[in-house]
Length: 531
Ligand code: BGC
View (tube, rainbow, N blue to C red):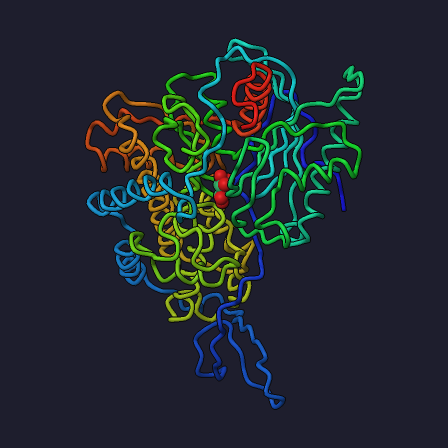
């Protein structure tokens, strides 16, 4: 296993990388249609052989002139159909927000709800005066990041980080192997960059950002409820991941002490508040999606037995990606969403996330394209096998298509010829770009519904607040923040403008360090020392 970092150490704290490309997980393939070659107008399919097996064929004509493309009118007709499927009206959005708010409330009442509303044991906001050096390890959906964060007080910090790309195999291997990999990366980082630290037998405090739903009994504990974002490592669900990681650290002799286990949304919330006191909500729109906010302890009935003061505050990791899972009552899922869900490694789970996050948007687009290939609307006479593979069309390509500045849509030409060997007409390219926009806009408007549910539940609308946002979709997808803002205005009317999203780059790593500092201070002061 390679321990070569993707990016080398960079004192300026680089961004978190672009919309996470390829997730080529073992999702079942679409069934090819069995066709007899001459009658077929499709570029690919299968023919039955004497042995009873289907043989795939991919047919390409060399006569470019003769390629029968769909006409502009046909493309416009198609677009109308997809517009009606993917467009969310303000009225529909308000219905979603109502149901969402109710779901958030339910999650605070008792354990085991679909949206688990997880108490994080992060008590209140940082003071801004937290100082010291902390190591933060961030296991996200695509990368593993190791950071050294030096809090300088007064809302200032310095971050030095290195990033490793996780392979698809690593997301499925034995859980222990995944944590061993994290420990080894941490050891490499400590050996390379912290050798000069005068530890004097002490250990370096670590904030571990583990961005999957974990039930917590205290801040340095977290039982994984379920994997999300395509991870499936056996023997982790139901286990305390903090304990698993501690044994990996011990196995490799890493002089690190895990102080806090947090979610990336909680980290983003706290890091952003450290520099911007208007922050009330932290959101991630990346490979996965989720939000955190600060709640009055008295409003969390399910932790009443802990005897914490009602007027204290605690951050809640909503895990809102699970909204509408299993029952599928509220979200306007299309057949493409259902297809993705049913062929995923977690059918029926993360229903909201599957309509929004970067892991799935490219695949939604691809499924529409495949449907149009199947019904003979596009790519007639061309080999389409490359684009028929699940998850080959990255969400980053939707960003690129939407951002194409040329009249001829040359970026779109490039994507289709280079990656899938397909020729396109201008009418088709205009359609593809419009389709990308429909899918990206629906994701942004659904994201606005989630934010609106928290705003409405917490009564933030009149006074207004900032929502700290990070993740590749938020930071790289053209127009995504504006579309979220438009969505908020459609839901709330002009007052929606009081809610502003703000990019909080690298919040999860910095937040992890701040929370580790807050935890050390709190415990040293004897405040809720067992939490
Ligand atoms: C996870 C969350 C995480 C989000 C963003 C979701 O799949 O369940 O814990 O915050 O992705 O990374």
